[in-house]
Every structure is written in structure tokens, then in C-alpha cells.
Image (cartoon, rainbow, N blue to C red; front, side, top):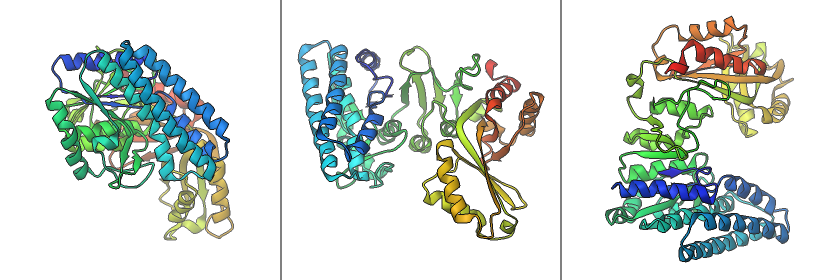
Length: 464
């Protein structure tokens, strides 16, 4: 069971989490718990690591004092037993003292490295996990807590986006956690944190706590992974746009990965990788509504469902760049130059579409990066004979229609585009990957919500 930041945001929430684990434990399940940092703490740590190189000792101490106060308050509300609460508070104070020393070190050196950044970011989970451990002890559940490093998760040294070395990880995790499970002890493990073979702390990047849960589940051959969050599961679309949006009961791993990429409340694709290969089902469940079965992600769910389009996502805050040039036609490497310029500027391309004439290419990037992207492209490409014009539109959004059964089903795109045409919505750009699990297209931002509603209605997703 993995519990996200909102699930452990307050002392009351932590008590609720402990109750869910205790109920499963008392029903006879062997449970491993993975815990995220309290809501917002990882972002605060990231900001503080960057600020520390320019800050005074006083500012660092103000931040650590606030962090201590928040976690001590959570301990007050999550743990009734005075002795256990005192022990947890001592761990919190000791952990924050260590964090303060690290931040002061960055302060003195005036530099934050990828290695030191990962070390700072590890403190969010190192502070939240003892709280859940204490709350479980409070409910008479035998338990022991570990960092991801202590649990045996070993990664490469790609700080910030470390990848697990599964063979050595499986060996260490089984050696350290299986004896506890045999003795009916619940291991509570920090999400997001691991270590290199030399014991240097690493983090697993976006969706890191989910990744920890799936790594452990594969290493321990778990029956299922339960991802506890603050929604009932993955929905057909954003209920703020379509109030009749439904929770999807089942998804394939491929569909879930597509949805996560497009910002649905699902697991990050890298976190799904280990369980997809091992065929271990995943459930997305609501910590505030534990009776709801949530969404099941498993192999074969595409054949278990007859629905062609299962979900529609709207991605805002994007911009479109159009690059034109007659000299690009038939010139090998012309697109590569465009991509290389953006790559060197650390700009990720979310979507790409090119005409067969080779005379133009359109790209979608995050809107916040548009200025940097245009500047880099104009400096590198304009006036060099290949590109004649670079234009941009910052009032667009991306719509993605997803579903495994779209593959091989004729007429899906036709239905989507006809539904949009009936609403008078013009499409600016289209892209579809060879997986055929989604069709993505760009419309003006003012038409985004209407486009989602039109597709949701066309495929009758509200009655799934």
C-alpha cells in the first residue's frame, strides 16, 4: 500500500491511513506500507535547496523551524500514546537537525549539486514515515520503518531520476523485508528514496513513491499494489469539465501509462514498468472513501472492455511552435537540428507533427518555456538558409482521447473530428503514435472544454 502526500497531509489523515493498514493487517493480509512526504513538503525542500546557496543561516533556521512545527503538530494529532508520540517527536527533531546541517553546508559552499539536492529531497519522506510508523504502533500493529536505502532499493547514480537495479534490489529487499512479513510485522518504507551501490542517497524522480511501491511489490512477489490517493480512481475526464464523468473500473497498463502522461491522476509510466512486466495488478483507491473499489490496472483489461475511447484529457498551459522552410525539403537532418536546439536548451517536446512535404514541422511545449524556445530556435536556425519562418501560438491546448480498443477500430478519428466539427471547433494540429492508444490534437484554448465535452458525449463515457 502506497499513501500519497494528501493522504498523509495532516495528523488526522495519518491516523486514517494507520486505521486502513490496521484493518487489512487484522484481516490477515501481509502488508508493506510506502509513504510519501506530507503534501507540499518535497516542493518546499526543492525550493529551499536552490535558495540555500544564496541565503543566510537565519533563513535556513526559519525554514527548519517551520518544518519541525508542522511535523510535531501532525504527531500530536496522529498518535494518542504519550510514549510513542515522544519517541516519534525525538526522531523528527533529530532528522530536521541533520537537514539543517546539509542546508547550511549548501549555504557556505554557495552551490547545490545533483547529489546534494537528492539528499535534501530525501528528508520529506524521512520525516513522514516515522509519523505513520508511530500511528500504527498506536493501533497495536507490530511495525518497523526503513528508508528506501535501508529496505534495499539500489539504483544507478542518475541523481534526480535514478533507475533501480532490479536484480540486486530484489536480493536485498527479500533479505531484509521477507523475515519481517513472516513474523507478521508491517514494514513502513519511505517512498521516493533509494541509494547507489556505494550507499549514496538517490531519488526516483516524478512518481517516485509509486515507483518505490512497484519495485517492492516485484521484489516481494506481491499479489496487488494499492495506490491510495484522494480520488476514487481514474476518471473518464476531469469532473470539473464534465460533472457526469465516471470512475473507470478497469484499465490496461498501456492505457494507464498514456493517461499518466496526459496528467490524469494515475501512476507515472516509469512506476508502472516493473508491475507491467511482472503482471502484478494495481488498484488506485481513495483514502477518504475506502469502501470504493477504485480503478484496477491489469493485463488483459483492454479485451475485458468493449469501450473504444475510455477517457479524454485536456492539457492546458502549452504553446505551439511552427517552423517553416522550403530548404528543409529533402535535407537530411533538418528536423534533427530543430530537436537538438531544443534539447540543448533543456526543453521537452510534448507532441510533434510534420507534413509529408517536409516544408514545415509543428511542436507542442510547455507555455512557460516558449520564450526560451523561440530565442534558441531563432538564434540557431533563422538566417542560416534552412528555416525561413518561426511562429508561435500561446492560446492553445491539447486534447487526448485514449483507449486500447482504438487500435484496429476503424472510424474512431472520424467520429472524434465529426463531433468537434458539429460544435464548430477547428483543429490546429494532430498526432497519433503507432501504439494507437491515443489520438492527440490541438485546439484553441477557448474551445478546449467544449471539445472534451463533445468527445465525452459522442462516446457516451458518462454511461460506462
